[in-house]
Image (cartoon, rainbow, N blue to C red; front, side, top):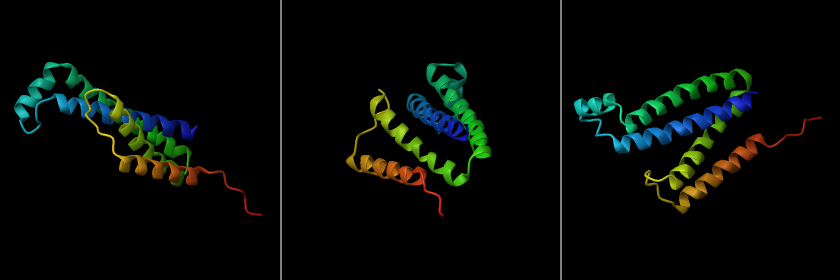
Length: 127
């Protein structure tokens, strides 16, 4: 059950990153605080995406706490690296996020997956 909670956390934090990225690309610069706040409070779609991203972060933390209660940190924590792969892959495909493909990022993603396989590979019990 801990693994399921961890995966839910990773999916939610990935969705949060994508929503926040898209929202911040659409909203005025945060340095223009008055204008930024007035646009956010007026309720356009980017503001809803911003709030949705923040809510996804909160839900992600709740699932993360449930995961940490049920599985060792040495197995739970590496799963967070899946978020990088999910966000990068989704950002390549989703319109409006303007992510570019680079072979080095693909290589890094392959290393992340290799590391996760090593961590989660079934181990034989010592006799």
